[in-house]
Each structure stands twice: as structure tokens, then as C-alpha cells.
Length: 257
Ligand code: CIR
Image (cartoon, rainbow, N blue to C red; front, side, top):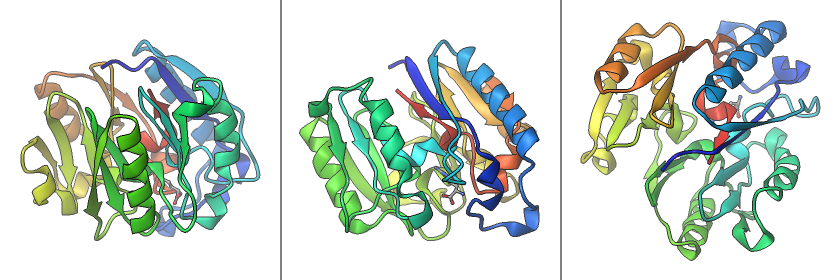
């Protein structure tokens, strides 16, 4: 179950106008964000994946967060229908990119009134958890499960109470290991996982990514880093401070398949 490909998109200068729930953190510094994006790409390359780098799109301040535009699996790609209006048209460009990897019969679309953002979808083997959030609605989740089943997968819905996206507080590290923070720590849906619990102060670091037995972790969260190392992974740190200012983390910045 290794990843071969990763798609990322360069941040735009307009990112300073991206959506945020934490304006008190200040506006992102574009130059620093670019440097952090370079480091992110380097980290991915060190995990033996082919990285496709899309050009920045100034029309969409949040467009570097490509994860929300699609969910890509081995068998199919599902183009999302982002619930955030300012982000909805980000899917147009992603569709074209995905067509380079998948034939038309393997590409599915979520349609209105259904909304889904990929940050609400977590893959665990052949099963997908779909967060019902402010961005992903019931109808979107229903369509998503229907598409999954068509391509040999299953899905279930998890209702979110607090965080933006499902993967804001969860990361699956394969081998039944699950990073959990906040509202997900005690959720019934995840009781059979080997949980690595992230404390409230470090909750941002629950958004990590497993890439071929390495785990990329946000820089500056030593407790999280040590816990993941203890679970047997090679940890790579990448600073994401400028993306954090827009509620974005490591998973949001790429599509991995
Ligand atoms: C947004 O609010 O849509 C962006 N500022 C952050 C998106 C983060 N994406 C993710 O968690 N998958």
C-alpha cells in the first residue's frame, strides 16, 4: 500500500486573503510560505514519490490546500464539491490534472446540493471515514459512499462537532495506528484503533501524513514527534506555521495516491 504520486499546488500571493478561523495568528508571510512549501516538496520526494507541482492560482486564495478538491484512491478519483463558496471552482483545474492519471470511467463527481471537501475524508485501507461538517453535508457524504461502493470500497459517516475537517484532528498512520485529538479521542467510531493521543495544546499536530512508512510531522511538536517515533516510524519535520494561520496543515497541502 505505497503511494507513488503526490499532487501539490504552489501557494498564491492572494493566500493572505484565505479563509481563517484564527485571525489572531496574523496573515501568512508569502515568502516564508513559499519556502515552507519547497521544504514540503523536498520531504515528499525523500519518501520516494513522484511529485506533480501545479502553478499557483491567484484567483483562489486557498488553492494550495489541494486536498479539499478531490479524493484519489487506487481504483478511482472522486472530484469533490467544496462547501466553501470561494473555493468551489478550485476543482476545475484539478479535474484536468486528474485526467492525466485516470481514464474518464474512473473519475466520479460529487454534485450539488451535495458538498464534500477532501479534508473530511480519511482512508483506512478499503474503508473511508467521511466527516459531516460545515463543509461536507449529509447528501455529499451519501453520494461519496455511493461512488466508493461502485469502485469496491466502503464508507461511513462521522459527525463533527468542533473542528473544520475530519483530518484536522485525525491522521491514519497505517498498521492500525491512529493519531487522535480533541473530539475524536473518545469517539466510538475509532475505538478499535491503536490510538496515539495528542494533547489539547498540541492538537494542531494531529494533522500529520504517512508517506511510505515515513510520517511527516509539523515542526515544533516534540511530544507528537517522539510518540510517532516510538510507534516505529521515521519522522520528517516540516514547518507549516504560515499555513496554520489559514487553518491548514500537512495533509491539506497534497493529494497522495
Ligand atoms: C479553508 O478554510 O478552506 C482553508 N483556509 C484551509 C483548508 C484546510 N484544509 C484541510 O484541512 N484539508
